[in-house]
Image (cartoon, rainbow, N blue to C red):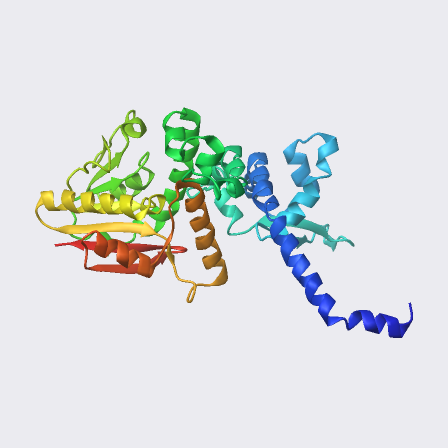
Length: 370
């Protein structure tokens, strides 16, 4: 090819845009590999191996620690390269010093990033249970059935894929219930990091009921941080049946759509996004009634996503919109903008509220009951 012909190729601006579009399209088409490879890394224990190694780890050291069949060991460098490219590990250059002389050739090694640090088993804020919950066949098989759901009668994508609602599935499948509860508990550890330092949130509260509190992961940390606070974990009887209270924490089984134990305050962490507006209004009205029964007024503490595309960073908005699509697919529910939250609150009989963007991609909202 002559230089003039090569110049023509390089200056073909129209085709360049098409090829850029193709690259973007393929990037999204193959993006499903990221969570799948992430789950594999968790199952292999790679974050924990690197953490326990105590320093950057070479590929040969990592492969040796994994004890894989020889035919599969060659896959590890490509897996790590892919995950590092996506920010889940970091590549570093390792300088070996032997008898005061640096080796002629540097080695490549891997260290944890802020994301993979959250996948170290046994650590206080480990989110590996959330990875296992989200990246499982039961859910993934549902996501790819959206094209069937959009033309069908089922309320949710999950109902189209499995024939039952998500709540019916976990109620009748102890394995799925455990996977779900463990995933939610791991997330609660992260939320508790912020909540236990929010003195103003719990100031003046004598009793709080954690609606949908699961196995009490959030409750245990908050009740320890505030020993004068009477903390009630409220969830379905099947969830709390075998759980034992400790000190100022107790468990109560029931149905939040019927009645909620009386308290000065109610905590709703990641609850309302599971339900449409009509169900949310029932929950909020029952929360208000439980506070009024106590007789002193109080507040509802809500931890949820507030979509704000105009002000949030790109990655933050991306996470929020992905959760919105997830809520739509699983529960025919949604994440909400501030305008949508206001409409929900006023429709439930609340006039006073404040939003505090304290928790990364989620916010703390206080609804006041006078």
